Length: 359
Ligand SMILES: [Zn+2]
Image (cartoon, rainbow, N blue to C red; front, side, top):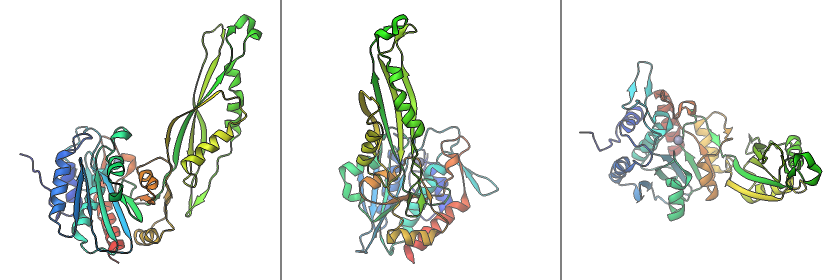
């Protein structure tokens, strides 16, 4: 019979192995959430709340700052890589070792071993990160109990190879439609060609010079690109419609509204007949100028890197909490059959966080 409890006195690597051996593929997190909840409830310095399979634990020491440590407890489907296996080189193999049960183990270790942190702490364990965005537990907490996520600074312990990745860029996808008039291609002058009508849009994209703003010392790199184009009716028909799908990846010094306004402005005089927003997820500021973040950087060392892809730090951004990624896993091996983590990274991350929170 499988064990259903978690022993928080295990060290970080052993706890990671234990978590990996506790399968929790997206949608099947209940047992792990139960185990995390009961383990945390034994710690008298924490208040524990639960919403669905999301568990939030907090200290309430009246400190001047509050820091949120967050991680998802689900994994992608297992690929013959559970139970975990520790090899002779100090590498732990298995589903979720990198993404991100090693990070969750560090959260649990800090929760269990730092009863009097120098900043109030909120630990967030959430479900369904690896599946559709509307299922994401962090999003559900943000909707139902935004106060549970309040803080001055957040660290998401997603695998970042123990380097700090600040903020994240936003992503906006729009459909730009041009219109024309159908005609037989033998008498093309009788119609108007919507594919040709897309030429000004493409010219504008080709000439676009993306910004590379420096924010809190991190250089971001924006991009405005056509990612797909659709048009045409038949090989002998002048087409009456064409759609250019454009993706704008933007730096966190633009709000979602500003990003949208910018894209409108770029294509303002390009003959766009219809402008449709297909998908939009805002950016998140790195917040590295905040005192809590400065102390964090000083404690963890290294040089922060900008995060170009969209991550859950953006959910904190939309709640007004600056956030970074910092976790022991190696993102290059996330979701892979040979997923693994160096045990030394787990210990390193835990030690760095502990020294930040106890200095
Ligand atoms: Zn992850």
